[in-house]
Image (cartoon, one colour):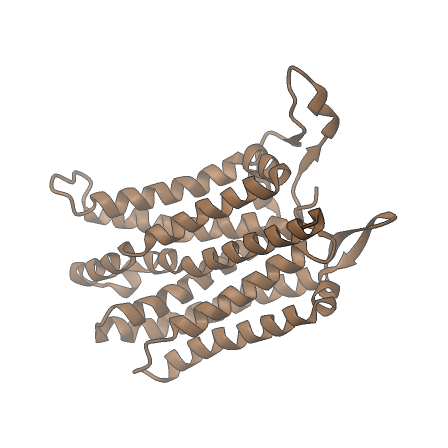
Length: 316
């Protein structure tokens, strides 16, 4: 095993974990629509009980995703998770309030009321995907940090990477494309959330609301995601060759690694199949499976074109 092979191997593992994490955001997507899909306390209780059986998978995958970066690419881990820690702390906080909300909303002696904790679940359902999507978008857009490897010899402060300003990562939210991608992830999570509830909650009243919400969120997702995808594929990325650093386009990566283009196309078809069939056929409740597999394919390809083919992800 060569060093080059291990880099490609670990980036594939990270890409797969990232793709699975986006799929598992169906929990957050469903939580963000508690009051839209559930109009009575009983209906909302059914929705919360349904997502409450699955939320640990999302959180565990998120932690594993970060752990894989620590194990394989420590420079990225120290730069992003260390220097840009406010973004990651906010992400962690949204998942903490999720766990607390599931645990205490129906406990005896709850002083805040069930509705308060359900609102916290909605905050997690919106802010979690938004911030995670924004963090992933920086793999393409880059971030405002500085790497000075010579600092490793500094006995007092051997820190080789640091943020270039005092925002500690929050300045990435000033990049419109970062925000646009984050918003698209929110609507994608809501699409997956409606498909999951449609499959997991056997209630005809809720299922009628699902089809309407599914159509609206699909339109909004496409409105935000397609511009980001086009700009990203036609945008510049950093590649390294024998002579140094050169510019290349992400579209070139997709064409050079044509099997990834096939997987991307298959993912798009599966996602659209799950959505369209659920909207057009009221009795169809298994849309979460083709749509979920499609999302994993698409996100996997986006990660791989950011890191494979001698491309540097997360440029400064």
